[in-house]
Length: 241
Image (cartoon, rainbow, N blue to C red; front, side, top):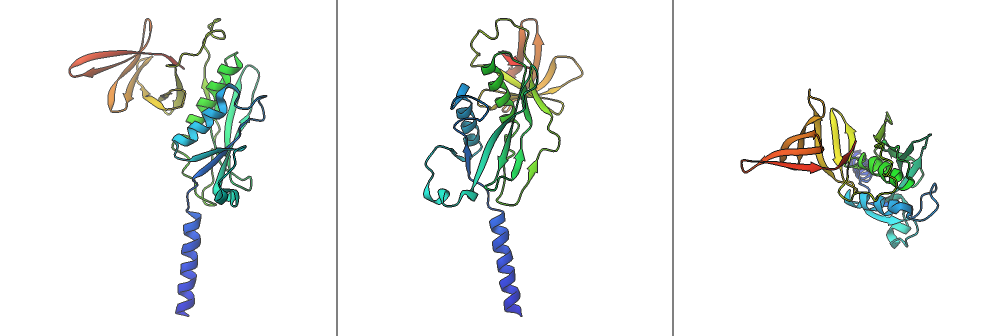
């Protein structure tokens, strides 16, 4: 009786340990279904890069997979971008699925009102990818983490008639809403600043790494002000809210 109980306990622990095994691999499309070309606007490269920064080994769905993965696709997560465009708005979210097509995680929706398709898709993708940062600690057949409220992360367009024609600023940051403030992310997306609202309009408490300061709008743009070795430093920041 004791032997049978011990065997049952070992079996349960083994199964529980397997269930807790974290996913290490992600497959992303080489071409998204709603776009005409492979890696159009660099979005597939952007997506692959994001999951790599999250610690995954990433393959395109056109890649030849290692034998151990090819023989067991259930070791892999599948990242699918879903387009939900509306009039004047580009909307994209990601569904993270297992080998049976079950949705394990759904990102928040990234949105843009830019008229240029390239700019709009890039902004929407950066927003929705950023919403998954640090959230994909998924384990095999164990965690189902679907966003309960899929509120859009909107990157607002500025009414600049030349915006469609000009090239995107490589130093441009994008403001993604969080509770009581924003994360300011780059094109990877990496979080560069975290800013929190104050009682004063267009003035935020800000943090950049270990540096604390004030993020505020002045006459000619947004600035991050902080003290360094007793001296006031004011950095001008290009950001889209």
